[in-house]
Image 1 (cartoon, rainbow, N blue to C red):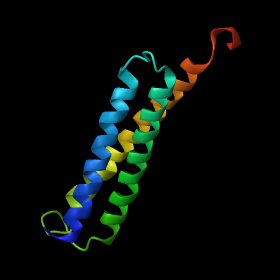
Image 2 (tube, rainbow, N blue to C red):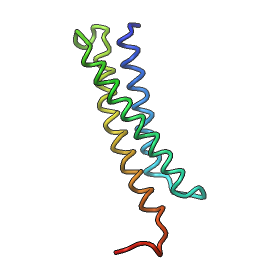
Image 3 (cartoon, one colour):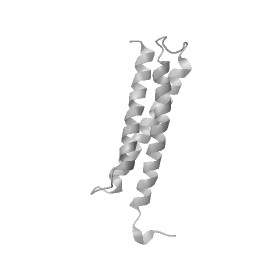
Amino acid sequence: MTAGRLVGGTAALVALAGVVIGGLALTRPAGRAGAGNRRSRALVALVAGLFGMVVGALNLAVADGGPGTGNGVVGGAMALVLGLIAAVLGRLALARSHRTAEPADRLTG
């Protein structure tokens, strides 16, 4: 296993974890913990997505070959795409947690 494959694969796995956590933050009900639990999941998904995008883009930028050369091009591309999805899911869940965290008597509109 080359260093490029290791970096690309790790970034893709972190981004995939961000997608899963972001999906859970969007679909799980608030429950007893309220919006705080949803907010923490959303932040984790957002950070994991940003990490995956940055590391995946850097891995693609320094790769000197195409897919199958051992430079981690496929893992970097997957990390970039999955990181974007995780960041979007995390941002949506964060917006939803802000909306549900506001008390009903303070809503305007």
